[in-house]
Amino acid sequence: MNSRRSFIKKSLAGAALLAFPLSGEAFFKKESTRIVILHTSDLHSRIDPFPKDHPHYPGKGGFAQRAAQIQKIRKENEHVLLFDSGDILQGTPYFNFYKGQPEFELMSRMGYDAATLGNHEFDNGLEALNQLLPHATFPFISANYHFENTALKGKISPWKIFQKGRVKIGVLGLGIDPKGLIADSNYRGMEWSNPLETGETTAAYLKQQGCHLVVALSHLGLQMDRGRYDDIQLAAHSTNIDLILGGHTHSFMERPLLTQNAAGKEIPILHSGQHGVQMGRLDFEFGSKAEESPYQLLNG
Ligand SMILES: [Zn+2]
Image 1: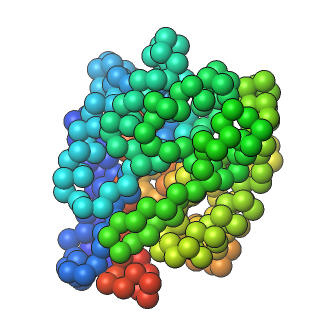
Image 2: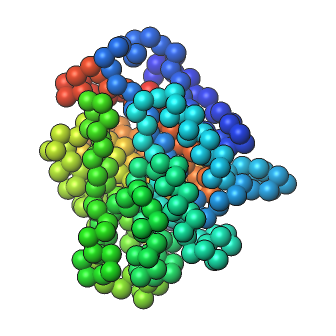
């Protein structure tokens, strides 16, 4: 590990941010491209911050504080991508009264680039989700939820490619097995496929499309029991996924977990807790020729 790497847990406007600035000069060659990836998960309709006397998260979270953080980071960096790993909905009276519309609209205004579907996005059923989707200007992506026989047909893409400078970033979504988690009537007609296999096939396809970095937005959970697939297994099964941004287990991490993929290479898994209390940030630096020189994770 590079000793100059420093890990700083910043607290901006009451919300924690994982930031890892690198003071070294070698990585800042003129021709290199820095990509900043921001991540939230399991926001659970937490639009307002927690109360000041909250025992665990006093004054933390809230969409407005996060919006200010994101705005600042965008001002400081040319290439920023903002993702969410699902379970945007359910958890506060906002959802009970307004059914998710403010969450989707505010995230659109914050400039989210993509999100994947968590199990709670189905809490009011597929038809309600279908009504809600137009309030999001960002795409929901899922490679292993298949909606051909539902009202959502054609509205959820398996993946999306983002071009940032010279760098192509492929993003795919992976959802948890709905059985036993979502009421049957709330996802009727939707097919689910094995996320490990679908994830790897989709990631391989994105690499074929020339993506320099393939990101899995996962709502599988970091580590699951009772036979459910999880992010650790996803990493171990894959050779083409470079980064897993996970959710569902509400796991707080101080830094990404580096775990071996199927080729024996270490790849990062990052979870960003819950309720917007913390926003994850990873900075990648790509060499002058992204095709030839691989990226470097600056804050691993
Ligand atoms: Zn969940």
